[in-house]
Length: 201
Image 1 (cartoon, rainbow, N blue to C red):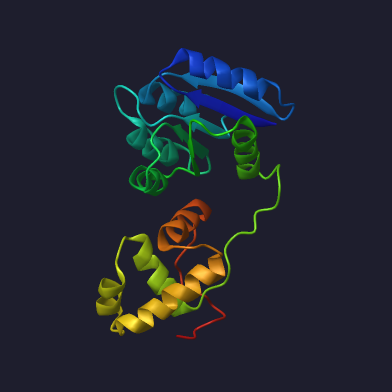
Image 2: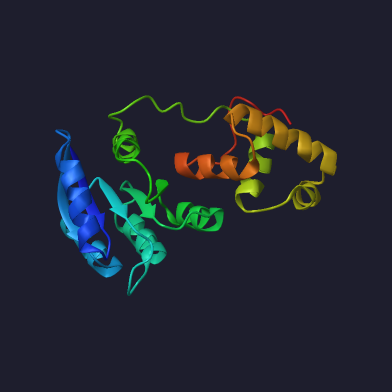
């Protein structure tokens, strides 16, 4: 059973989400909160697997609440459900510790599928492919927001070489651009420790 907590300052939305989740036999809504402070308290007190939350709330605010909840319970999954459909907010939330980022016009089926997938109950997670040490170095700097020229300078490479590494990384991840690559890496929680079995550069 997936134990879900709903966090939003709009009661109507929380009630609607509760009714949606209650239609699922393998999901139980165990708590709800209207502020980040209340959500943090409930994470300490309740056994929660997934938090579905907005990031625009009074008081503490969503981003700080995400960080604090992950500090309290590192294994908790946090699904941001927000009206903000822009990459800056998406990346900020994922950097803060969110597991997924959805816009509020998302379909009910996608929301349910996302929650279940995060808990291993729906579909197979393909995870991330294997990278060489140099690819990991480049990808680590991409996640930090570095451009190709900056990556080249930091690693002592030619910019053209970095472009080739970036192209290989995007192809391995099956994404079209570096933003999608960064989002995937943050969502999967890739560790940038050196691969033991592959030291190719």
